[in-house]
Image (cartoon, rainbow, N blue to C red; front, side, top):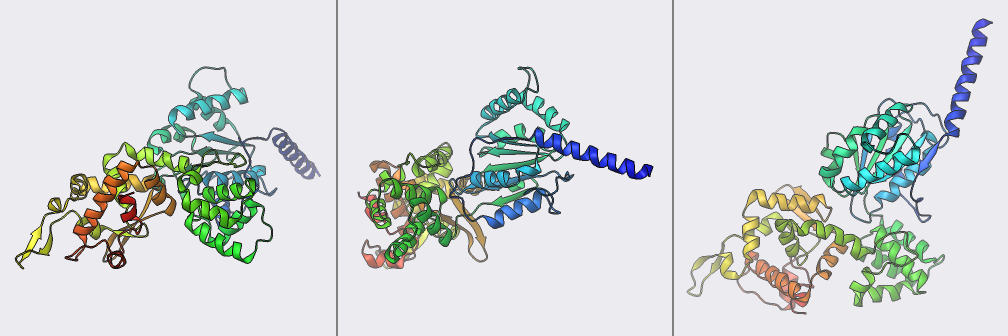
Length: 443
């Protein structure tokens, strides 16, 4: 009898504890996920499995604490939907936590200010002192595993990780970043790349955002080509759909505007958009980050004038090393790239192994290029279509002439052909060249 009374008492205490926790639950999110959020089921399931490996937590399920505290990173390109994914997870599983926090991690200074505002909102300490250390002590004092911290836009990992790590082992943390190297960080337990939407999801988002419930067949065909041109990037598709809705355009009309007024359309941010920046402005932040790295900037200025789908390392090396050609006297001769007007900065960069590696790493770390090693070929570089397009759009006429002409000379020297022509047959037989290169050079 006494045992049963004790069991009922323990049960009542546990129930009261749950009620107290529910009463003090707080969610600090600056905004909710967009109502047009779609897909990402696999990514959401993966996050839940990492944070709650035995299926506990979320959706009103068990609130049992998890002892294996996790730091998870979501990485990917600007506009891929990393922030939206983190917010969707937070809202879906908010019942598993007593507290959910969202902090801007753009820089260490911004992050310190975010911690200070959070400290003041919670009234956990007198103003003054190190807000990071004060928040750390407060988080440690909470029930283990009962809070979630989202650090958004932590693109400068080297700068912000020292601010994040002091609070990293008492609960759950999600970091969103463009830096593909985040998975190698010793404080990050798991990392997940947030890919582009599928072609089907992209079309669905376009029609949902533009308010087209029953698009006609010809609109569907145009939409298929449009989302492909936009590289299935959620930011760009959301912007296009919003423009179509607000300006009362058809998909075809928007596609025509994008073709003939690329800069204006990609730099337009509709007032009804949930994104803070236009496509061009968002990508410009990435470009500005590499402007301070001469090697990465020089390499990217070449790549945007070459075929975006694949540029191989052997091709890049051929463009800056002496190549055999038939001389005017009919003899085989070794031609120096400088004599073929290959830019000196490219020769110095690509012929310097460590500097070349660093330039590639800089571009990869900002998700500007993708690079994978292939057997028998070496590294292969690809660029998202909008990064490829916007990389040229941001250049002045003089810069396009300079870098475009340099890319053409680079291509001519790297080509095994002896004669070079600007005719259509030359473009068709040289897949490394971007078909808009010749026009861009001289317009």
